[in-house]
Length: 121
Image (cartoon, rainbow, N blue to C red; front, top):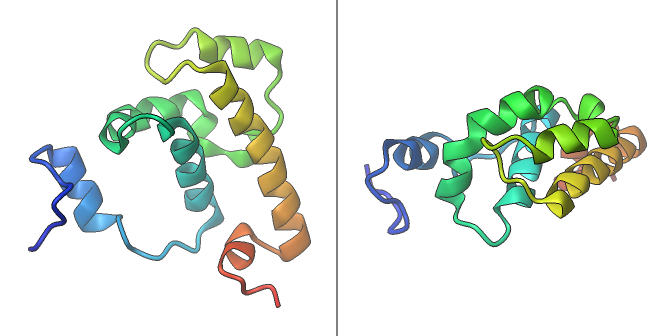
């Protein structure tokens, strides 16, 4: 299989490239997962995020957008004290706000996927 030049020899990166990267996604759950991970990736390498993906999944309630939208200061503090994830308060708060907006988009357009793909017309 031909791989892009940015893929190194890390099995996690190879698996991501071969099975996820560049593949269309229409599932709102998966789209929110990627949205959340991209929020934390800002300023960092994607491989850093991939190595912490399972920790993010555990810390952020399996990427359940409805639960994340309800996070309060207590949960945000819990996340800030979790050494397995990126502990940036702005990114954590953005994840909560983004979840709330994600849900608003779902309500207005039927799904985030329809909105994202421009299928709501």
